[in-house]
Length: 319
Image (cartoon, rainbow, N blue to C red; front, top):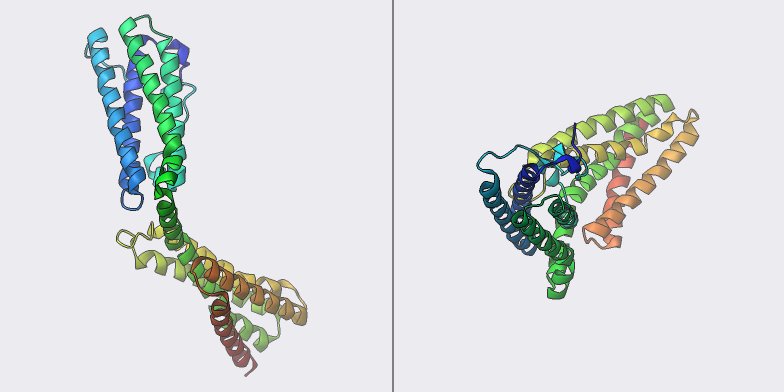
């Protein structure tokens, strides 16, 4: 069970502070390592903060050794009530650069509050002096973290980092999602409508569409995940890309499959054709919005491809 902060003695408070500073320095180091290639200015600030956190830990160790000897109690933030739960480092790898900045600001704000409260819990003047000094330093870190954006905005760095973040978002999420949506929406048209025109039965068309959509989703998901580990290309974790691509492929196929739940074949076919038109329009818009493709060109490319596959399905199904 986590203990109330009010129950900690001076030794435990110092030990907790040492552990917290070491943890934060590791987190900042991990953030900086992950961001240094694409966001060098943010990474540079994080490295400065990492080194300062380590310096704080060493000062705290010296103060503990002078007052309490060499035996350091083992106590961590999660052992004390009131601390915010730190995100595990593996999860922190998924944060965007803006989320990292907000996380750092939150961490420093909590550290300042901790030192302010801790300084009131000791009667040792040298320990109290150190804790008050660290509270002031952490307060400056809060301002530094909050000033990330304003400082980089003035220097024009933030525009560069925003463009980098946009590019990474497109590489890691939009591209695999768009590839899946296009494959699911277009490639499943032929089997679904071929089955529909061959059987004139909505139920049969629905079963074929579901099989084609889910099968294509699994195939595309594995293909995307195995195609690139993302280390050199910067396209992100392969399993995340594969999941996005697989889900969007399945979604693209299921969209024009669901209308065949309608028992009336003519009505189901009309609704399915309308859904196909919407799907193709959405794909064209995404290509225009994120891939910098002119809207007319994107629409022409998508519609021509979709119509050719659609006609192929009808011709095969009607043969």
